[in-house]
Image (tube, rainbow, N blue to C red; front, side):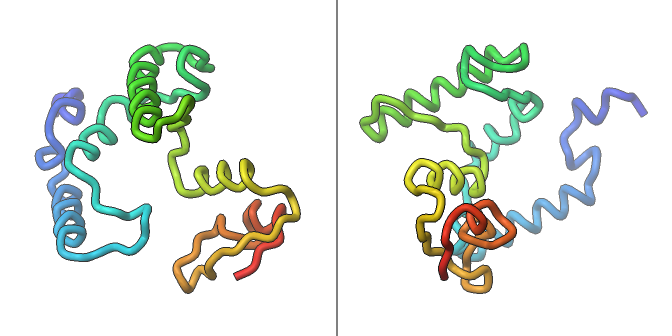
Length: 147
């Protein structure tokens, strides 16, 4: 086998079993309604962007002020996202970096609440998340969480 094959061939050729699993998951997503925001069905263009070569690049920091080199194209993409968010929300500033619900929850709580403030979250069994006041998470240690 050519050692470059995994880098140039589509997944269906390299690993048909995993491709079959992905196809089954796509069908599941197309035929069900997810009520968890982080599991929403996204447009194909979003999947393309998230599965792009930008996935290979670690880009800690802010555009133009990264901790690693080789971020010039990530900076362009992030600046586009920032400009679009500012325009969409009529804002002077925007940060588009949180990559998960946990990061977003932390950003919101740190921005809007003080240590010891009471926060309300759902129990995990009722659709809540670990970052909504669970004792093992920062939100349950720093804030007075209730459900």
